[in-house]
Length: 74
Image 1 (cartoon, rainbow, N blue to C red):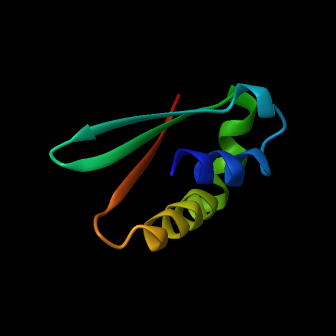
Image 2: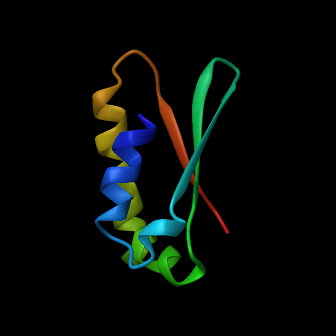
């Protein structure tokens, strides 16, 4: 899952080397935290959050057994 997130996000951002995904499990749910360069945060969020919501939709559609959470670390 981390690799999928990295592949999607690296196509959007300018500073590809600074993209990092950390995973932790809380209450039997997978949580992913996305670390980005400050200039790339707006690109990944998109207008009204449309880009990040589209990424979340793709991620959740690949994992039918449980919901996956993706957050951006600022």
